[in-house]
Length: 580
Ligand SMILES: Nc1ncnc2c1ncn2[C@@H]1O[C@H](COP(=O)(O)OP(=O)(O)OP(=O)(O)O)[C@@H](O)[C@H]1O
Image (cartoon, rainbow, N blue to C red; front, side, top):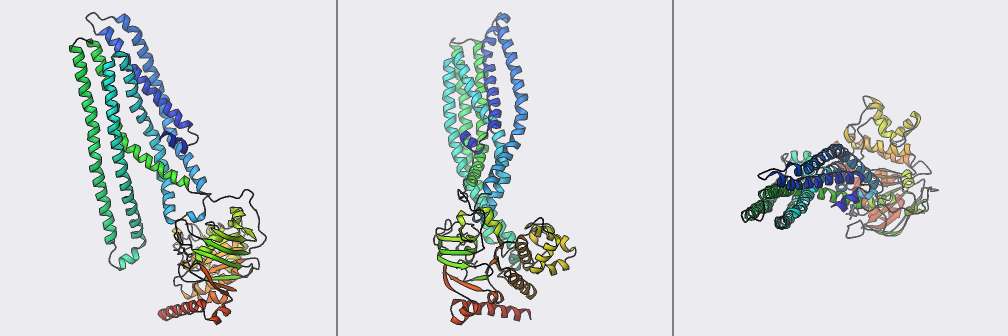
């Protein structure tokens, strides 16, 4: 455990300082108890010999003073340590996360990261401070007492050693049971969290179906969690009783041995009293160890979760990265890629080219690999084989910062910060002038949205942009791309139904993006108008390129693209009929 903590905090000076102070206190306490032997020996006799007790009493007073000083020094170190350790670890985690490929940020990983950075880091640091001290005291104090007892009476000392051995066996058993229960409970808690998120997200659907309070699956998961908890508590009780039984039986055995030694005249009354006090101070901290097992286990789990985050593989960095690209040319040459953990390639031998000044529409059935193409261009993941060049440079040779500066992504679900519309736009170019903002808004057809909003540019968009419709949020994202002057824009057109105004505006905005002769626009297209306006279409199927050409060429061949176009057109007409 100490080694793991040292790995988490490569500069463990704070912890080492705190723990050495606590260790010194524990050893000092044990040694002070040892002074009881000569003191009682001098005092508990028919004619007390105060003179021979005096030096020990002086030594005891000096020791008590030193103990007090250590406590005064250790307290503030402890308070400071928890905060400082959490801050150090948070910084380390955030530095590491900044080097991870964007593909790592799945919903599950984001949830783990949020939990790691907030709860786990804070708790692990707090526990390292609050649990570390008592664990040191509960092990070092009994060890010192045993050493001191050996100097007084070897028979009692040996018995204490035997009790310690038995107790450590019972403790390991309790720790094992607690670990198993904790893992099961954690698994059940993750299931509950997953279903709770689902419950929140699916509220509109659930209410419509009359299940607002949850689905039978949710109730089953909650029941499983309760059962796991009950079973875990029941299982953890037995080793707890075994351990406390060992400690209590140990005390009875010590009492019996001391009584036997006293009655047989092998030790004096004074020594018997001193040995009893030593045995009590040996057993009491030993007894506390069982209460620390659960906390230690919790700390171990938190540390494991933090270690897992720190172990996430970073994006390989080229030794001498290319810091600029000449053009926004994008080229795939026999690219094959399988997602980490995936069982089949998402793209197989894909070759395609998207040139600056053109708009390429990616089409294909669900799961054909359209999103994967865009993710690979932005280097969310590295390809397995083939070559992916941006501006003629292998993306793996490009400085990741430069690549992301050149690229803007317009996701289907655009995330906006709970801030004004102006600040959400400025994120792309903080120093943009008003003219630049207005121009980008015009090109993205955002200007008409801003005009309608009660406070214009100063209107707050609400949490995640909830004040705006999906189509309006996409217009903000397109305006951001223009403002950023990104030379490669990757758009995942909204596949859900948009009102006719938003639909026309987004089609126009995407067309405006493509007007720049230096810009390469790649759109995962879901609308006939976008398909018709594209210069070039790449039709994917099962991770392979099925067809390429201009929309007119592909329509005339009557292949997959023509089929998809007809489907899109039919869906649109249904919607229009539905609105009418
Ligand atoms: N994060 C991921 N991990 C593992 N497999 C994935 C992941 N994302 C996508 N896939 C798989 O890769 C393949 C291609 O998916 P991709 O999302 O690129 O398809 P798509 O054409 O964009 O589909 P859609 O139109 O439904 O968004 C699919 O088989 C999909 O299941």
